[in-house]
Amino acid sequence: MPIDKTPEKNAILFVWFNHYAGILVKTPSKTIVVDPVDVRARSFPYVDAILITHEHYDHLDPRLITEIQRDTNCTIIADPASTQRLQHAIPPEKLQQISPAEEIKIGEVSIKAAKCNHPAAAPVTYIITSEDGVKIFHTADSLPFPELAAIGEKEKFDVVFCTVGIAPGSSPETGFEIARLTKPQVAVPYHTNSTDYQQQFAAILKEELPRTACLIPELNKIYQVSKRK
Image (cartoon, rainbow, N blue to C red; front, side):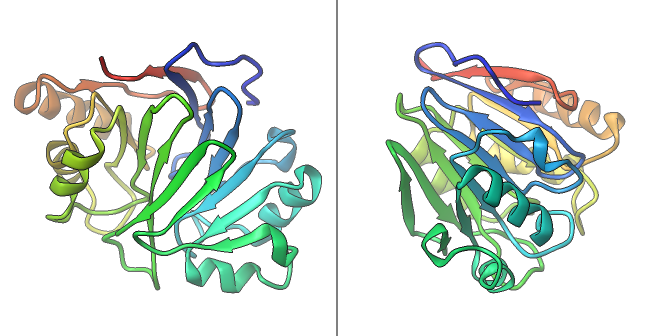
């Protein structure tokens, strides 16, 4: 699973590594992992930062996070509830709490937290901006909410990850609504174990939002997304 190659200029690479919100992102200089669960620590031999969206079992595995951090000395950025779960296992200088509207820099890569519409204690979504200005929106397993339109208009996302299953209330239709509100260059249906749900999302997107491309990911495969022109 490690991404050993470097993305092209004005691009990022990503891998979807579980049926939930597990995403590995490679920018020109940084490797970022979001919500690692159901995976071995040795799958990530080098990591600069781990981002945690909330405390649910399919997004936070404290033992795994501790093992990856110990092996790579990476920074952990987490919502308040997950931070509390991790505070006795992660060195304090390596654990940073984040809430919506806050930003943390990992080198030249920007990590901003935004609102998340999901029944957890204090969940967040993440806006990741690479050194080249490629904009990634990791929406955890959020349902759509009206403020997404303003976020999308401001950020002009290159890629948005859209939950289409497993999470309470989620469906291909709610995933499409996230894409409709944020209007990215590329929409990625994830957080599902159903290829049918991904195909349904793709069909709705093609009909209703033809200017946004759909990328249906396979597990553990590397994809490249370029900055919009």
